[in-house]
Length: 333
Image (cartoon, rainbow, N blue to C red):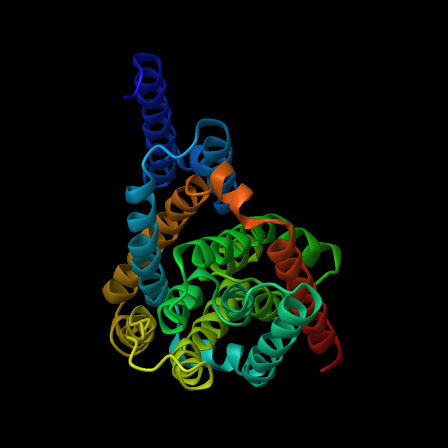
């Protein structure tokens, strides 16, 4: 049975969780009150993620099931909402330059990740493949899609997701700083972030922190890259002999494209329509910031312990390879 002291501690942790979430939401939406906009400036994607991480590592997970579910769906709704702030033609033109390297990098990352995981560190097949897939395409979404095809165990899924999650959190903090240190322009940073950062949430968060153009480029390339989930899952079912498993298709990507089409060819035809599109886009950005708090609050000390050193080293080495090679491509192309 759970002791009274433990129940009290859990209740206090939940109160702290609700207080943090309420504070973030309150200050975020002060942006819509004339004269109080400056008070919301401190609530940025990195700050929201950091607060979530600090809470999880000091207090544990207050609402693990809620965090997992809400972060998944709120992220998808946020990405679709971002589409209402983008012009389809401009976005495709901005992202076109990164498409070619996307194809090469996806295949290359899978091959290199498999070599590092299986040959160098002797990590079990499923974990090595899941980490490689998450790094190659779109982090947790790719792992969630490929895991059932591999018939991966819960422990293997947890290790792979934990590895990718830890690196994602680090990326959101260090990528904008590195980009500024290297004097990368918006196009360059957007391309680099989309290919070298794992999850869509951190890609969008890093892009938003860097600038409007970086956000547009990063989102377009990342979501195009995410479509590789489908052929990857199909190829996995044949190569690794796991036929008959259901493939999880990221339908929200198609709704993101539809939102861009509506914004470009319907809303932007009138001043009122443009204001509606801008309003949806603004709310989506704030929802994304809250999503990052949920994602940060999903990490726990148990996840850190479960990852282990070898999978984490595989993830780091593979991440360094893709980050450096992408930088080389950007500067030499």
